[in-house]
Image (cartoon, rainbow, N blue to C red; front, side, top):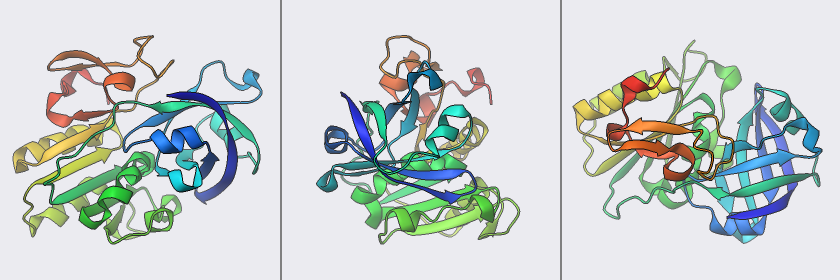
Amino acid sequence: MSVLDAKVVFNKCLAKEIYFLLLKAKEVSLKAKPGQFVMLKLYPDRLAFLRRPFSICLSLPEKDIFAILYTIKGKVTQSMSSLNTGATISVVGPLGNPLKLPENISDLILIGGGIGIAPLISFLPMYHEKAHFIAGFRSSEDYIDVKEIFPGTYEYIVATEDGSKGYKGTSLDLFRQYTKSRVFNNAIVISCGPLAMLKKLSKICAQAKLTCYVFLETHMACGMGLCQGCVVKTKQGYKRVCKDGPIFSAEEICWEEIRD
């Protein structure tokens, strides 16, 4: 983990209120592994007292660069959208417990809901030849072309709730349809999105006997496990999303204890 100032390399709007931010920070780009995140703070400090967590969606260590996808939700992300090349952001990271996948994995099914596609992209550089990326958006206005962020041989299929782009329905609807005519051996599902979506996916994967991992997103104050503010109840007791996660086996989560 490093605490440093990162320089903005690129900050572009890709869809309705969704931005792609490239930051130059050698220490972070070299250490980042799939599934990890950073805590960011803008200058001046008066914008927000606490740092904000953002998933690392891509790391390019050969260029000393890492990237995040973010959506405008409040004053911090609104200010982020105005950052120009050369601006400075305070960064702590990489944080979180990365997920190491078994070597004999045959297929990696990535299922993202909205901005939940962000952390899933981090698995593509290593596993794009085995990946099937399923993304769900509300409409074509929210659509992100992941192939533009990371080109590769993986399959990228999209669903929109209003049918304006790709399959009409949710990412879960598309997942059910996609897996009907396919048999997966040694496949792993990784998903990120709204809690209601993750709950349903957990049940679907359990019935289909598919190994499933989920990203849990909670409010974080420190991002390092000190404040105990992001705990989640699991079958092994309470765990910290920032330190023990943010990726968890879907079957270990006590879903009935989590509010949608």
